[in-house]
Length: 171
Image (tube, rainbow, N blue to C red; front, top):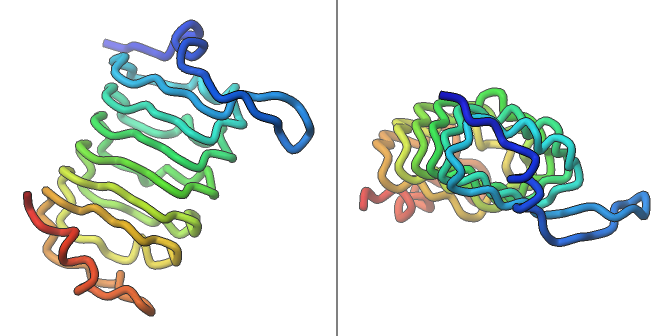
């Protein structure tokens, strides 16, 4: 059962008109939650998007984000994501919500050095590993309702395992 994003759905979700560095007008926001989408490749045409909400769909991959280099805020919660290993672009992300998916491991987020907030609540994560080690600006990490056994490799500088404890509670 495939349900790709349709042009009329994109049009209905676009908002916040802005100006690009080349002095052209472009939409900066798109909200397409709850449409049962299995693919969102149609968003690649809107490369200047900064805010994207694709929550409450049936997405299994975030590959379409490769065409959105200016994205700052992503809500992809409540989908069917099992991996974000191919999730490399965009590089300027500040906030990401991947809560209530099917993620079993985080992978490397080294390219997302500007990340400030990451929500991973209610996935199937058992350990954090070193995937966030290069995210120097990360200030909020929600790991609630996971089976986190350890955060080895995360401690660096002012970040320690103890500083994550309140965010790892099972609630």
